Image (cartoon, rainbow, N blue to C red; front, side, top):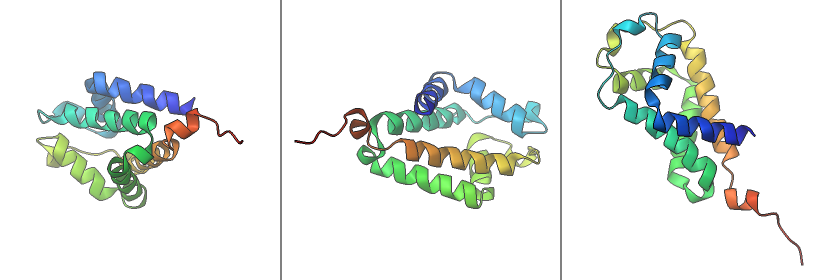
Length: 136
């Protein structure tokens, strides 16, 4: 069930990244009206959704590079989220230095990292999950 919900979230993020970005801005920024997204910011959100769907449908065994990168990003976000926050802000916004982050952005980034690790965990080999082992 959780796997299906995460796949659905990934599909929504691929198809409609702007509402996801807008929600994140309202939640994470003191001054969301001042945020100036870079032209390719929606591409970053789509990429995140694509990675979720790719891993959860194909399985991490078939996507070792993608799963390694997601695991690394998730671990960094959980352990030390500040660099990930700064990097993502600079990629997404033209005026990242003028944006005022709310106090809970760092804990939220840790939760996002935990979500990345959960996606990685749930993305065990999908064929093995779909086909039960038979003994002869």
